[in-house]
Length: 419
Length: 183
Image 1 (cartoon, rainbow over the protein chains, first blue to last red):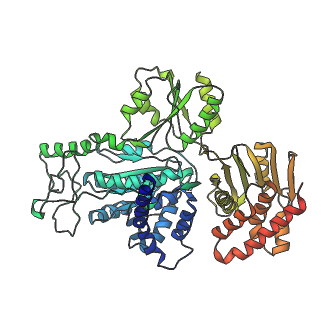
Image 2: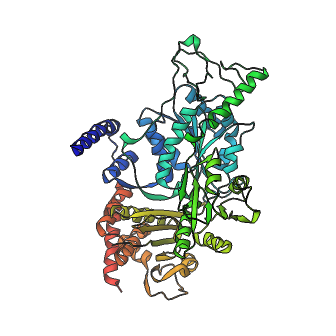
């Protein structure tokens, strides 16, 4: 009985999933990327680049507008979306620079599009003002930043994690940030969908950080059926147009969002504004606006934070690493465990807001924390902030900024130094 | 072929020799065979010249670190690449070098295949452009790391339709060379 029930459930899901695929296959382009992808889906497991996974994740999440300026190592995202978006009725624009790109996706989002841009360090720096604008106007959009070695143009094809702090504090003014950080091609796909979902739900600019190696790396992945992909739509106002406030809020500090052209009138400005969007100099209204920006993140922290705990149950030593470095750490842990050393890994999938509570709790029982990162000390200071009970010598730094990955052997060596 | 642990392949040479494409083809073939795969690359800003390498790791377990550290197989198409990576080859590893460009071998590995691949390709197919497929097919045959059918499917899926024919010829040439020169 129970078997047949589950089977019928599955079959109903499939029909829902097949619809968008049919619409695409009508257009006769057998060599196109989407045909390749669907061919792969028959096979279930495909080989895919991190950048490809981000692109298809964005498409599956319903992104229908991309404006960007191609830059290594994120170029593939622009390439794929340039091919795929027009087929699905979306819009792709190659802009004159990154400043225009972030402004274009903010504008498109206000007109009701789900929008995304992709860049790397140099472009991310140019986008900072626009990101601040998207945050103060509470406009959903996603910026993918495939990090390369900096500062400035640096080394375009070498990995680095130099933008961890920039993605948090890059834009001026005191604003919250949501930043996601995958470590595998499969997670690129999942977190790309999640980034779009979170931006729609929280009405803010969400940053998806990637490492150069991950963006360019190909890996075997099994993607979920489209029917199992959870897509969040933005909250629409339920009130008549003359009651609408552009920056209204519910109990969870989330606000409904009307689009231009739907009959709702609102004003959009980068100046500090009241609930209708008009500039204000009243201190009380300015305070309200700033606290709403903060509270919509801090009140929903459980929804936002994701953290992976790997072999931490009996660990004496913890490694805290994000992105591609976490994979080196996992390889090092396998080597250390083989020798009987109890090591575990904590890996944040959401790096901002920083998972304070979870990290503090998980680091209570370990004696030492090793923080390997491809920069000169960004994550380690956050760990230091949360581990006041530990000595300075119990927080071990492992930093590399020469354009190479940290190898498992280097982490293993650090582990052996501290035991 | 079963992979209890990581099987690491490094394809190295200079930009323009098609090594990254060869890496993608090898990785896709391994996926078709049902293995876990990661494929990474490192290259300079130039589209031709400069260094270029592609790493493929094939395993039946989860692959953590995505770059090759100790290779089970090293393909070197330039002297520079050969000198740089030779000492990271495992003792039992397979070394394949193109004697058209690699003149000095600093270390005699146990399983070494030395053939003038570029020269042979030019003589047989009239063009050096498919040397990557010839060497890759040779590599696949002598190591048995992917099945012949998977490699063929992978090449067909990866290269542009207009170039399938010439690449099929290159693949067959690679297989033939492997049969003739098997150690």
